Amino acid sequence: MNSTRQLSQLTVNLSYLKQNILELRKLQPGKELLFMVKADAYGHGLLPIVQFSFEEAGVRSFGVACVKEALTIRKELPELECDIYVFSEVALDIKSNKELYLNYRIFPVISSHTDLDTFLNTYGDQFKFFPLCLKFNTGMNRLGFSCDEVALVAEKIVSRGRSEIFHLMSHFANSSLSLNKNKRNGIQRDRFENIKRKFGELNISFKHSSLANSGALEQGFKSDDDFIRPGLMLYGPSSLSLKHRDLGIWKAKNISKLETTVIKVFPVNKGDPLSYGSTPCPESGQVIILPLGYGDGINSSYQKAKINFGKFEGHVCARVCMDMITILVSKDIEIKEGERLAIWSYKGNSLNDLSIQTKTIPYELVIQLTSRVPRVYMTGEIDLNNENSSS
Figure (tube, rainbow, N blue to C red):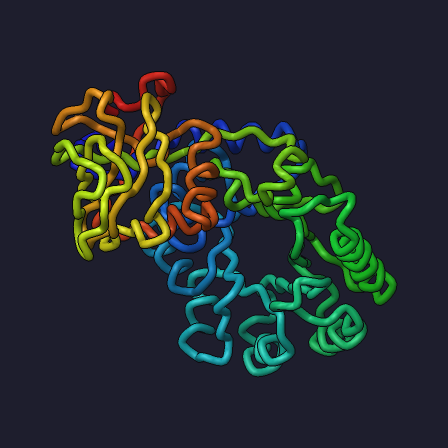
């Protein structure tokens, strides 16, 4: 693995990813994983995450948002015999996409009659034996066939000489809330079971089915579906809302650490002007300058946020710049230029706590990191009590 240290870098511990996958399999025995790796594997690096998950953790199915992401996997990792599902930007009406689905065996998750008609009729001969994946809207009200359209969808499938759906799906809208107490979650479960029953009555079978996403899985969701679709939970942070995290039975390790290097330290008095706009320093202490800014994905939501650096806490006391951030710490803290600090770490609540401080969600904190921040990959255990040491 690449271990070259940069001033700032996102260090991804692939061993922790494997541990999280193994723990999920213990929690959901016998279930196949459809691992969501859209948006560059949630900012962690699409190709390294897919390759490691396939080769070292036995994952055989991956979910992406668009054809481009799927094609990147197929072209760059041609030796991987895995299934790849496109969930959002299916665009079957674009002829070139049709060729890509066929030639690279990429599965479009069909959620509209336009795409279904294209799949079954316009390209019927080419797709005659191609896996048919369908998504139904049980309450998310985003993508998917309506629950009352089962008979119509079945009729279209039968008219083309088919009798099987390869993968039947739906998606929880409120799994970040209580599965048991939130009525909408119960309604969605019942609707999906009813859809499966109706297809059976119409002599349409389905090889695979899935409903559970990260929030549901964190709460120990059980069903007779043979697939589960984990996303954020395998990268470490919780997808449950702050008020409902006590419902989670899932304990994972963050697989990434955003670390950087102190490039300047100086004393400051209350009221001293700092950075753009001459922001008055809120109190006396020390200012440390870190080489991360909005050009790297550290946006204005960080302003006034408190950051736990492990041995001490600091808070962003001035406007975030393109490539620098200004942190105020106590004058009693011993810190020197060149020291390493972690904006977030491998510790369980690190990313979640930072998301609270920045009034955002863990997804955004990682995904918004730009390519200016190198991704460095490693394996092995980390001394969680000494994370600010060299990786």
